Image 1 (cartoon, helix red, strand yellow):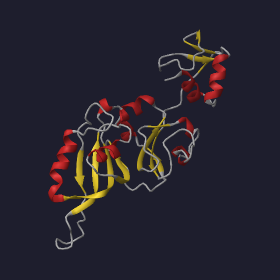
Image 2: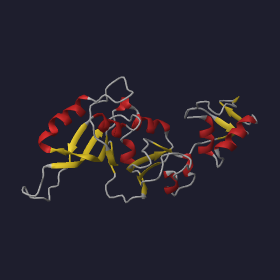
Image 3: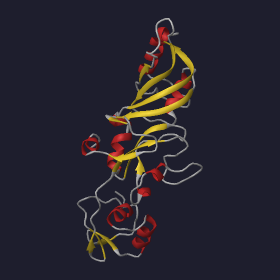
Image 4: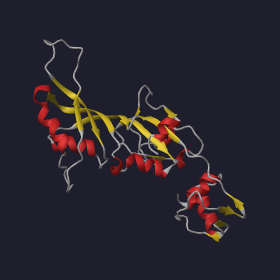
Length: 245
């Protein structure tokens, strides 16, 4: 963890205040004066301010049902940050573990534990993320096998030198229609991927000649959005946190 972040987690200081304190030379790490805000410190280090030992607060973990026209950022821009929806102390000291585009809705995980979020977003961890996708062009159930296989084998995205990792594509059919009523086509699918390239889902469907018109993330690993309403949030349970440790 960065030293300035450790100070913020151990005191009521803001990040800017922590950096000013470091420049004053009042902070010591294992007895040595430390002024570098980016210095990496660990749980076994002794960090003091004027001789007082600091103890970092317990890390926090939340899930949020992101609404459209909000952004996964620590600052407000054209759209407000999703952190505005988290009604906790020092919400803007948190960060998002796996961002979504402004127009994408659904499950977002939020924490101040960098190692934990790394386990969520690192491609090496192969954490599955499932999206419900609405498409411009319908897909015929009778002709879907080839498309499903393309996603399974990996797609060549524009500007990328390697194929995407294997992805699972499932058609969502309207089971409420009778055989006579159904046209055996759908523009709604579920897509599960294990990486997070820039605009990946949208680019994957562009690679097969289709266009995403709606995108919603339903699940990350074994954590499901379930019945959490748009704009609502909650703390993760101990069991949910343990899934990425």
